[in-house]
Image 1 (cartoon, helix red, strand yellow):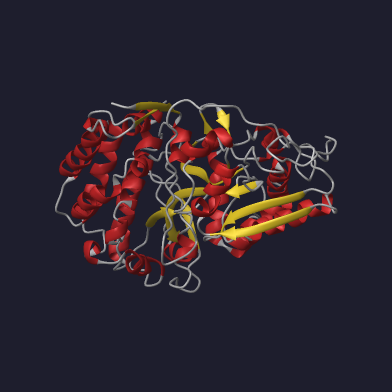
Image 2 (cartoon, one colour; image 1 turned 45 degrees about the vertical axis):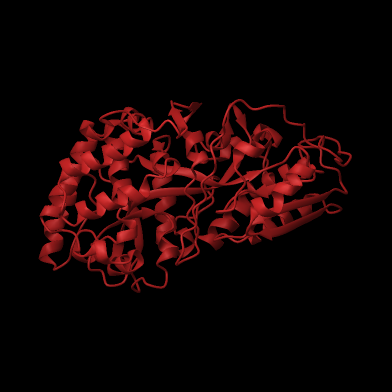
Length: 478
C-alpha cells in the first residue's frame, strides 16, 4: 500500500471540490496529491530567474516590489471570472502608480502555463483552478512560501492573519510549506425559504428529531420535507457526514477519511442514517428523485416550494437564481445534529477555502504576485468580491448584515461567524473518486429500496474496496 501523510486540510486542497457559479454546469477541479518529499527550496521573493531589481522593504512595501515593476497575473476565468483580480490590481496600482499590473484570463491553466514553468518563465501570480489546473505534485517545489503575505499588513494597516477565518492557511500547506492561498470560502448547510417558514410559524430544525417533527408539519401543509435529483443524491451523504462529524467529533471524520473498517458503522453515523431512514419511510421526500435531473428537482424546492429543505453548498443561490420564487428569501442553517449537545456544538459547520492562488519562485516578479494577493486581502477588494460574486472570501467582516441584498450570503457569513473555530472539512470522497458508486446506493436508499443497514453496507464496501486496492495511493489524515 502506498501511503503519504497529509493533514486533513491538505487533503482538502489535494481534492478540492470547486463549485463555480456557472450553471447549468458544476466545474470540479481535483488537485493531484503531492507524492514524496519536496525537492529543492523556494527562491526568495524577487530572486527568481530573470527577476527584476527589487525595491526597499517597508511597511507599505513588505515584499520589496520595485516602483516600476511589471507584474503579470494569469487568472482562471471560470464562475468567478477574473475581474475581481483586476479590481485588486487596480488597488495595488494606487500604491505603486509607476508599476504595471497585467491581469489575463485563462480557461486552461495547465495547458497554457506548464510550458512556462518548464521554461522558467511563469507568471508572477496564478489562479490555479478549474478542471485544467496544474497538479500540485508537479510544481509545489517551484512555488514561493506565502507566510509573509499573512504576516504583512493589509491596505488598512492590520496584520492580514488577524483578519481571516480560522484554518485557511492549512488548506494550502503541503509538507509543511504554505504555498497556495485559497481565497474563497465554501460553506455547506441546509437551505430553506425564510418567508415560507415565517408564514407558517416553522423554525429550522437543530436536531434530527426536530426535522422529523417538521416533516409532519410539512405534510399537513401538503408539502414534503426534502427533494432530490439523481445526479445530486449524494448531497444527502454530505449532509449525513456533516451531521455525524459535528455530532461525534473528529474521530468520526478521521475514521472515514482513513478508510477504516466499519467507519460507516460508527454510532453518530448510524444515528444520522437511521433518522434519514425514518424520514424516507414516512414519505417526507418528494418521490421520483432517482429519475429526475437535479436542477429540476431543486426547482421543486426553490420555485414550486413542494419541499421545505435542501442540503447544498453556498453556491445554491446563484445556481438557482433563474428558478427561485419571488420573495423566497433563501436562507441556510447548520446541518441538524443527532442530539442537542453535539461534540462540535450546534453551530458547527463544514466550511473550507478554495480557489488557490500561487506565486512561482522563478517568476520575474514574485514580489508583485504577493502584492496583488495583499491587495486581494484588503477590505475593499474582499468586499468587492463578495458583493459582485455573492460568495464570502477568507477575509472576515467584509459582508454586511444584509448580504448586499442576498439572504443566502448573509446566512453564510452569519453561520461562519457563529461557528468560530468549530468548522471542519473533508475531501476523501472526491480524492478517491467514490461519488459515482455512492450515487447508486444513495439513489436506491432515498427511493426506499435500501434501509440504513443496506446503505451502510454499500458505503462500507466502496470504502473497503479502495482500501484494499494497492494501486491507489492512500492519504493518511491526522
